[in-house]
Length: 228
Ligand code: ADP
Ligand code: ADP
Image (cartoon, rainbow, N blue to C red; front, side, top):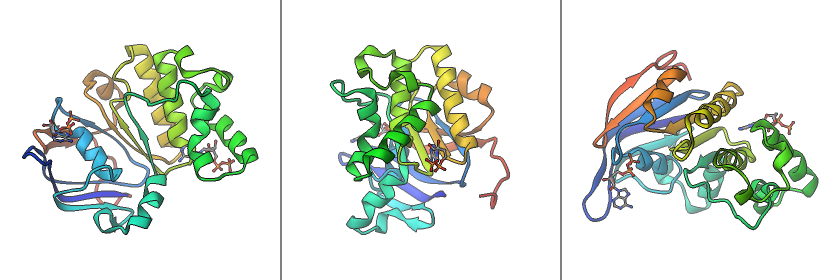
């Protein structure tokens, strides 16, 4: 599904954020990306989501080199990847329903379909009863789950999350991870950057460890090469 082949990323100004990274994430797999602050986690996710470009090497998405995509193909790829940020970037003057509906409204989906799919997505994250609320009225964990609903509304086959539990207490973090596990069980490929090692360990998923822009460990991969 996602493949990095000898990928390096150097930012203007000279910072080497990633150094010769190679790994594969199979279709339907779930993995965590961990490592201290500055290790390169966000950069790696941004390369997948086409928010940054590699300086060297190739990033393949569904077998296609994303660095070689024509400009007009980029929106198509972006729709196939749901991204969840730590600061969930909600519009505070729009109701939960409208925040979640936004990607579909942009895509020109009919209102009947939007309504059905927003409700399905809110139901999935346990927030069906909050659709009329405004984000500032919700707890941090609820707002984060609205962010997930918005990220999955277009049914992307891949979900990327950057420190999604960053502002949450342990109980809410565990709840949020359950939501990711459920999405993964329904077939979504999931990659989550997190430094919450305790939480990650308990979930028993694959863990990629980044240190100073290199993958120094890759543990718990199910199936191994060729499984997805
Ligand atoms: P992490 O998510 O693990 O904290 P990042 O990918 O954010 O790591 O950062 C990796 C390195 O790249 C750090 O040294 C960081 O300062 C640097 N970096 C990140 N973004 C930029 C940028 N836009 N311009 C220059 N340097 C950057
Ligand atoms: P529908 O019944 O609306 O046609 P689907 O058959 O496509 O929906 O999906 C069944 C359920 O799985 C729905 O609740 C939908 O929201 C959910 N779903 C499908 N794909 C994804 C995805 N990539 N991420 C999250 N949820 C998804």
